[in-house]
Amino acid sequence: MRVAVLGTGTMGAGMARSLLRAGLDVTVWNRHAAKAQALAADGATVADSPAAAATGADVLLTMLFDEAAVAEVAAPALAALPNGSIWMQSATVGPAGAHRLAAIADADAVTFVDAPVVGTKKPADEGTLVALVSGPPDAVERLQPVLAAIGSKTINAGSAVGQASGLKLACNAWVASLTAATAQSLALSRALGVDPRLFLASIEGGASDSPYAQLKGGMMLGNDFTPSFAVDGLVKDLGLMQQAAAATGMPGHLLDALQQAFTVAADSGHADDDIAAVATSFMPLFTEGG
Ligand code: NAP
Image 1 (cartoon, rainbow, N blue to C red):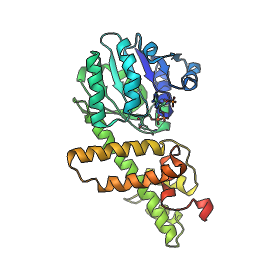
Image 2 (spheres, helix red, strand yellow):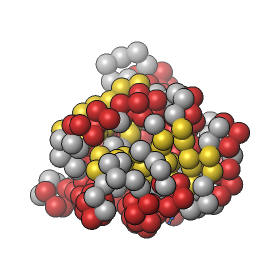
Image 3 (cartoon, rainbow, N blue to C red):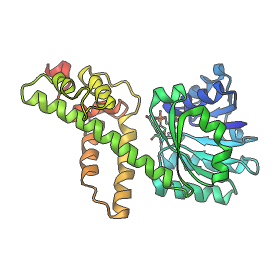
Image 4 (cartoon, helix red, strand yellow):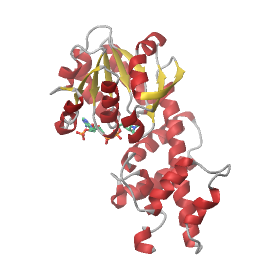
């Protein structure tokens, strides 16, 4: 199976390497070419344009920042795909975005599978992402070699485009809530004159504990904001959640508060840092404030 991967950033690079480890024939393209060229040592063919990458591919995999980038990059690639190929769209674009992208695929007679992923850089590197898929069942079946290579599990969200992207927004709302809530409890402990490490120790092993709270809380306490999932990406995703809530009539008050917390962090210089940097919107850095 030949797979063209468009976008070899944090996630796309790991996914491409996982495909290569599984023995698939992988061609990569990235806007800043150095990130694609880095994959040549792993066995990838490096293309100099999206159309060149797509030529002869059975599967087109897009892992770009947002819907606008995906639409721009995919247009020439779709035209170059052979008949019968599948577009596996894995960037987080929300259900409405997935529908708009599927319409572009329809115009080029390419089968679209809505396939966002759960998991950050490490699972992408290790091939242990959770793939969320929705689309025509036969196309999802044909994607099995790709899904098995990039992930440890596939959740089939239904046969309609947009269902997987909807589930992805629900998952990222959870991630945003957990991360901001961890920062809030650390900040509250500190504001009340208690060692914030005691908050993590207090929940550890109990019903309200979460490995994610311990992981991100530890990063917050250590001022380690090495990006696995960058703040600007989550601000983008929270915007998609707010739009989806508005479109469906679901109250968006918690989403609004989360958007405010992460936007404050982005605007104060942490846009490219890990989402653990949301801590900076609640309190000074630990090294600064003790
Ligand atoms: P990233 O490291 O910032 O990479 C973004 C990619 O998009 C890069 O390849 C970048 O190219 C490309 N890009 C951005 N704007 C472009 C444009 N206008 N034209 C062409 N290429 C453009 O992001 P990431 O973390 O890999 O995330 C990729 C997607 O996966 C996003 O939709 C994100 O929401 C989603 N996601 C991320 C995570 C995570 O934990 N990081 C987890 C699940 C899903 P350059 O390198 O040239 O800038």
